[in-house]
Length: 230
Image (cartoon, rainbow, N blue to C red; front, side):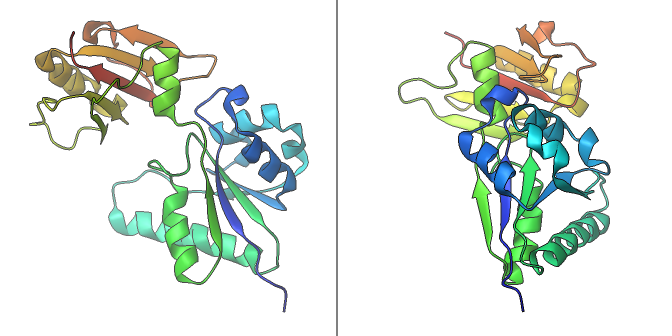
């Protein structure tokens, strides 16, 4: 019986192929199979980033792991289980698999759900960090996230509309595009100095300074940095 392969969750950065790590490039080159989120691997944002730095990726064995964003919790878990089963079948042949993911593999990453199922069944899994959209967006906006002893708060979308954003330090708001009007109201009331980056590192990147500069029709990849007013 063949020794089981290893699964790697590899972050490819937020959008700029030059921001892929050397380790990510090496693992993609060495990987037997590359797993890509979505229905069509070559249409994935993660694939389009990675192939620019690793042209060999275009000739690799690719598999799609489709995990659509739905609200039905049972459906979500069913899709996660299906994705894990696809990966397990490959690992059982002894092949190593690299799952490429946008940004960093440890921050709100879809691979995390697969990791839980794989590890529960005894498979070896390694996370390989990439440059997160948080750090990349701050650099794109040319603003430090925190200085000296400032705390740092990360909020995924708006789940609590009563949040006043009134703790000391800097807030980063992720996954806010579907609630952008509500978010802008919160930011406006907070009196914070606001920077927003849409499609960080991509050709369509846009940077906004100030709450009122943020359009109401921004795309999914929007990240907001809200600093205490000086």
